[in-house]
Image (cartoon, rainbow, N blue to C red):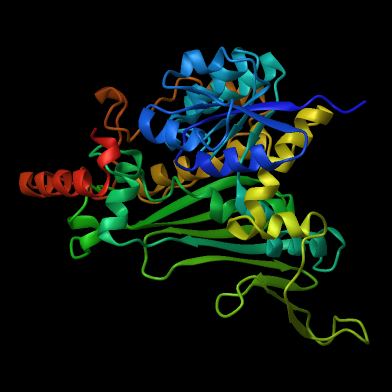
Length: 417
């Protein structure tokens, strides 16, 4: 007898289009519902999938008969939506970022533990072909024990593209601190080494008053974030993320028997592996550069975005639902990755002080953070607000806001209909 299909709904049709397409095409999965507040583009997209229900209200969407929900709504609204979905009996996959505040992190852990539902954090960079290959080498002992790693996710955009991505004044991309969006840098290092951060120190490259992507848009946070973490095995990682002028998605791992890294230039789907002459095997080269294939589902994964990672985040989520076994990127791992960014920003605001990263399996540590609502979100209460920039609140002249809103209406009419 064939297995019952896993019925999936997607909340948010921006980034959510990828998840919807993957679910609709995957064997044993059925896309049954889509939810977005922008009714016209949602219905146009849903027309590709006859029979798929559409909703503009999240509460009504959760009443639909389905097994799982993929959250691709605003990044800073994932945690409340995840908690609501799990309490409605749905498994949850959440896009980046997992939570906006430490209190949300505590509430999310408790909801997962109380409901028993699968929660998966969709950090797709963990499943790129290069990262999976370095993980295979590390797990086989080829690199020895993890000592140091670097992860970079640098993503500059033009002023117009910045407006397209964040077409309203208080859109989360316009105020999110530079360290918060850190899991594309951190996730692969944790995935490869299976270590977790225990201490974090943060730095931020300040808001640039000479950069038109800052001054001609609604952006009010800093240019880039640098994070240093001590890991639970005594090793260290360095992360870089933000809007510096070189688009890059890059990872390096140093073990005590060798190193491996993704290529910065040329064929960035290849890796470089090196062992010192006195430590390699007799027939083993000192250095090799090659393009790895996915160990499984190569053809399917190769046709998807983010180096194939977009296929595997959906595949792993469905596998976890079918088997009942939590994925590696469960709520505890997802929060270890995400909360590094929250605490690094506090460090940057506090003269680069070091912060301890909580163990989210420990009830005593959850208790410590359960009322920590500090947030840079301009919509949050003033008493809980912290600045989004190390320079304080970035004030924009009225003419900049007026110009931004005119351009946003031209570039993104769907947001203003």
